[in-house]
Amino acid sequence: MIKNNIRVRFAPSPTGFLHVGGARTALFNWLFARHSGGTFILRIEDTDRERSKPEYEEAILRDMRWLGLDWDEGPEAGGEKGPYFQTQRGSLYKKELEKLIFTGNAYPCFCSQEELAADREAQIAVGKIYRYSGKCAQLTADEAEEKSRKGELSAIRLRVKEGFTTFTDIVRGQVTVNHEEIDDLILVRRDGEPTYNFVAVVDDALMEISHVIRGDDHLPNTPKQILVYNALGFKIPQFAHIPLILGPDRSPLSKRHGASSVSEFKRQGYLPETMVNYLALLGWSFDGKTEIFSQEELIQKFSLERVVKSAAAFDYEKLQWLNGHYLRAMDDEKMFQLCRDYLLENKIISQKYVQSEDIYLRRVVALVRGNLKLISQIDEQLTYFLNDVYAYDPQALIKFKTAENISVFERVIKVLNETDSLAPIPLEERFRKEAVSMERKFSELVHPMRLAITGRTNSPNLFEIMEVIGKDRCLDRLQRFLNSIQKTKG
Ligand code: GLU
Image 1 (cartoon, protein in one colour):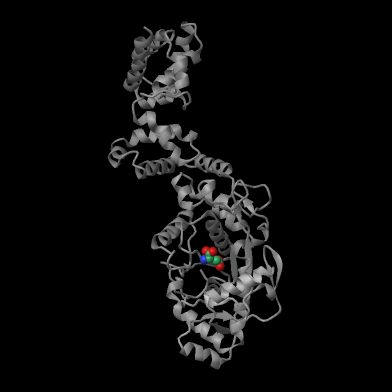
Image 2 (image 1 turned 180 degrees about the horizontal axis):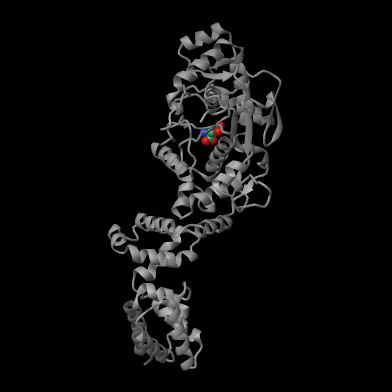
């Protein structure tokens, strides 16, 4: 497909796992590109060599793929504007820096950390907001050269002249900043490492990014970056700063609120369709009320104009509700596969068990799936299907492990022994009749039976469970329960 000039990028730093904030930024970029027939680029901002780790980079790629956010250019995909790792773009930054020095837009700054710190303290002491004094901006080329020759290290700063920078953010509207608030920003540090505000501009310009869509924590960087664009003579892209994601207590979402990385949500059993749908609703809305969107609908309906300014609160309950929706809508085969994979990955069952008990597992999953809001809940739902029951709900035990229930269990066991087919509907019918003949309520039979067979007070339909578990195992559990009453109460 021939792409138009719309080019957007997601530019994560591989210093941690993909946070939902980052995933939402990636998603908005991706939706914007797919909606408009543009190009979505993935660029790895790995200039922080100490904190960047290959395993984080791998995890980011893996999580993006899991979410279905495929990129047209970037790691593994390649592309004409590469390389797509900042650590491989050093020569490009050097070239642009030389241009800036040559045109006088950048200058070396020899001030030491100590000098700068002292200057900062002095300014703060008299109630000023710290700004670099601009001392080295006055050095002549000869003076600067002389210092370099003597071995003095320098950072490189952008020469910021007096004035104002104004831009129109697609989400925020018009933003104006007085240059008095902007330092002569550092482009390259004394150790030779270029800074984010410099390399991001070089990359965005050389990669011909048309729209920079990112979190609004970057809003203060934008005027600085515009100054760099201007100094380099590059075309300025459009900007859209999307609102922060807050935890339920309205502080920025972090680990202390619960899961906050995509991989953690995945591990907990959320589906990619849930995450994509939910993340799209964090800061964007179509009509203020529709909440369920398939990926195709999002692509069709997404626009930056409908991104809101105010911060979005992350609602874990709503996320679970949405996951329940997608789980219910899923066909049995896919559901089985997801549950099986979860159980295998978490070593709850073995590959051998899956092979020999394929039919049994399928029936069990089909039976309990209605109770799942998360795939990971399958573990808890399966226990009495996979293992014999020795532990019982303590409250229910007090209620049902009684001498009066001895006759109930005796009768239930007798009836079950005499029954050949465990087809659920006739089986239930049979026990209903038995209850009538015993002059008991049906529930007075079913509740103790459920406890003996599952150990619980809540389960899917007991007669369906009995059919799946099988007559022998049911009889065994009922008998053991009866024995234990007889032992203590008999
Ligand atoms: N690497 C930056 C971050 O992860 C990217 C910022 C940007 O999109 O310009 O925050």
